[in-house]
Length: 357
Image (tube, rainbow, N blue to C red; front, side, top):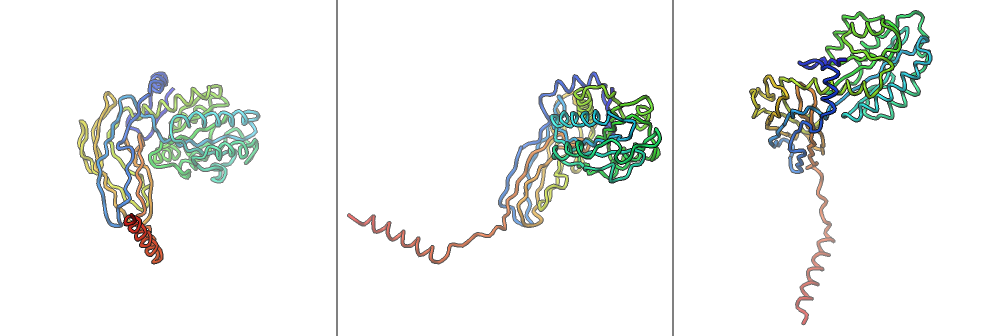
C-alpha cells in the first residue's frame, strides 16, 4: 500500500518498508538552540543569532498533520455511517500520537455544498472534531442520495480549496464512502489537490467503483475492514518517507512572529550550497546532515511575542523551537515622592542605629 505525498520530490513509500521505517524512528530532526529569549530589542532594532538544523538519518518525527474527514451520509451507507464515524475518530486518535494534528470533518451526498463539505473546519482542538463527527455526521443529512454516484469529487475539491490548511503541514483528505463519484471533473480535482499539496486517502465501505474513483484521483484506498492502526502506520510512514530525499532546507517562522520580523541567510549547507535563505542540493537521509543559518529578528512594532521557528525540508516542517521577545515598551512605574521620603527615613534610621553605642 502506498501513501503518496504530493508535495515531495520523492513521492510515497512501499507500505511494508514504511512500516519498518515508522517503527524504527527514535531520534528526530532538530533545530537549535531550542529556545531564544530577548527582552531588550527595541522597535527598529535587529539581532542575529545562528541556528543549526540537523536532518537525522533516522527520519522526521515531528510532523505537522492536517487531516480532514469527508463522510458519505447517503442511504446506501446505512449502518456503515456509524462505522465510518468510529473509523474517523480512531484515525484522529492515532494521528495525534505522531505529530501536531489539526483536523476537520464534512459530509457529502447527492449534492455537495461548501457548508456541508466543511461542517467543522480544521482546528487543533480534538474535542471540536470528535463532537462534530458525533453530532453533525448523520445518515440522510444533507440528503439520502437519489442515484448511486455521489458528489464526492465536488466535496473533495471544495475541501482542498477552502479548508484552513496550515503552512508547512502534511495535508490529508480522508474520504469514507461506498459509491462511485460524480461532480467536479477528475482533472480539476487532481489540479486542486496538487495546487494545495493535499494527499487523498479513501476508506472503502462499498465495491470497486469507489476504490477506482479514488485511485483515479491519485489517492490510496484502504478497505473499511482495515484496522485504524494499520492506516495510521501507513500514513505516518508515508510522511516520513516523503522526507527521505529532499532538495531544500531552511528555517522560518511561517509568519507567526507577529510584531517580530524573521529572516534567514544560509551559512552552511552540508554537501550542498547556500542560496539566500536556503540550503540547496540533492540530499538524502543516508547520514545525518547539518545546516547552519544566520537568523535575524527585527522588532517592527511594540508588544510581546512568543512563536515557533521551524526547520523546513522542501517546505515541510520537520522540527521547531521557540523564540520569545518581551514588550520593551512596558512603562516603568515611578516611585511616588512619598516613597522616596520613606526610603530616606529608613536610611536615616539605619545610620542612627549604626551610631548607637
